[in-house]
Image (cartoon, rainbow, N blue to C red; front, side, top):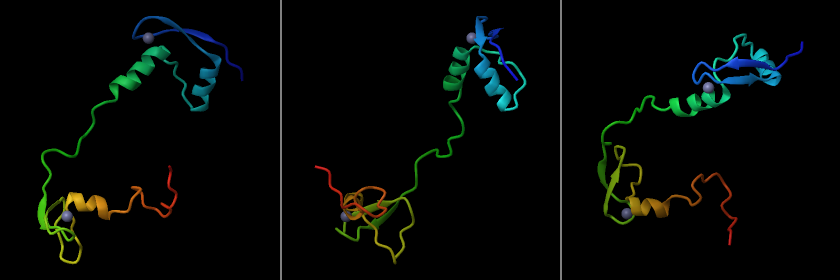
Length: 113
Ligand SMILES: [Zn+2]
Ligand SMILES: [Zn+2]
C-alpha cells in the first residue's frame, strides 16, 4: 500500500496544507480513516493551548493540626492528625530529620563537589 502527498484545506485557518504520505501512513497505522481537518500548525495550537483546565481537587485552605515537635519541643504544624506513636517535627526539624536526597532510595553516599 502506498501513500502520496495530498493537499488539504484547514478548516480553522483555511490554508492549504500537505498531508504527507508519512502522515497518512501514520494515520492508517492507528486505524484512522478520516483525513485531518486542520493543518499541523492549528493542530499544535489546539493541543498546547486548549488542554488547560480540568478538575482541581484541592480547594480552600488545608487543615493543619498543631503538635509539639519531637526534636526541639516547638510548635509543629502538620497536615495530618498527630498520633502518639509517631514523632512529629516542625518544619525546621523536618528538614534536618528527613533523609537527604529527597527520594531516599538507598545510595546517598556519592557527593558531588
Ligand atoms: Zn490551520
Ligand atoms: Zn522542631
